[in-house]
Length: 526
View 1 (tube, rainbow, N blue to C red):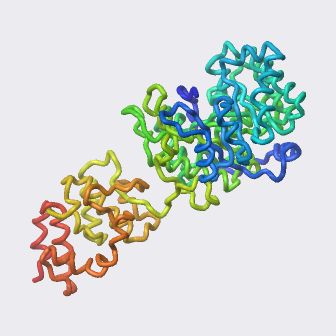
View 2 (cartoon, helix red, strand yellow):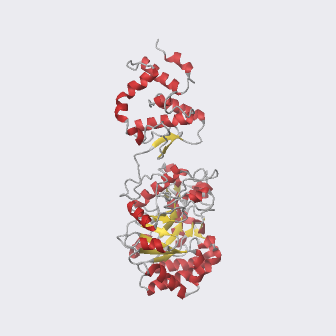
View 3 (tube, rainbow, N blue to C red):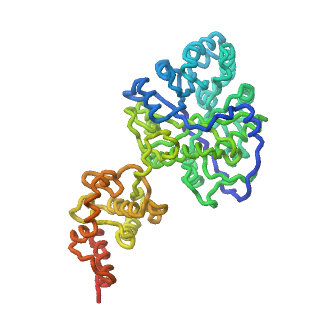
């Protein structure tokens, strides 16, 4: 997977954005003639095996079934996994590794033997739906470019001989840099130096009814264009109309980077008069961990991207250019491949660890059970990294004061007083307010100082308000919460008016280590 150097020019023309109305398209009718109308858009998973202590193929298949993952892509044609997939109804794309291209592309007998060994031996018990011939060949091993299309043709001929060419499609995944000037999408075009390969390749896809496979990573687009590409556009977050990316030539509005990348591929094909090939996103995702140079490789961003991606695909919303056509997508990847070489992010693209525990909890509760590790209702509000202490202090003051969050647990001597710093205290107060407000929209903002996370921030005896650990003990706590909080502070809360204001202010002062003690005379009843 060669994801480095992704689309450095992507969206540099965003400065020319303007407003307008969507343009029409003519691709839909042609694709509808060649695709099964029963097909529904789907999200699949890539499965890499550079994982220490990887579960057995049988356990892997059982896990896929529990998670309701019906589409996977392998980076080879692993015989043990293919055998285990038999009768599972899970559909699989198998791959020809790059190091096998030369032999297959130069020998019909080798191509026939490959199909016989890796396809005929398993199909139809194992539902092989596609063959990815090589991976990002044109951009990572350009010396193999002349042999790529011949290899695809020979493999296709072998499928025809086996009468499987209608059930199994042949294509090759491309890296995003194959397409240049990708924003605005209407100006995108394939690398002209590779036209001698790209033209026959696209003609092959059109003739055989196969998709254009693209590995598209908005993560790298964002990282290489910070200040131009907003984070919200990169991770499918709702944005204001003023932040939408607009193609000045078509006046199409783009609310997310992935749609723009897909449409760039459609426009690039159109430049070669290819209008009947559908885009299949064979890889996309977001890393959950990185080194100091990758601050946005983090669990919350990965969770947001992949959760919103799944919803976007299953909502069948298509792209601005082709709203009637939704590209199928394979998330990179199922497992964290801990045996991969640095940088750190390379080993942290997975949704699960090798022991099948989730790396993070997706928000996909309305997708029919797909990726059933979802716990959408268990979310927390915490202080965002990088916010200065003065801003956090002001937000903490508001949450414990006017916001009426329960800040009892961050008082000296209580369970959440330590670590004794403003970020830790603010996180507890923010979550208290967020849970009190029923996780309502906008209740975890605090002028940009807070963020929502699915990772339980509880630690030791400090149990955050949104934690399931606390919910198990709420019976008695709820009945004594108000009086208990007051009694711990030695306060009487039955009065109203200015006395009530004094009580709230005094609670706030204790929560902030008496840093605002000079305010007490102003709040004392006269």
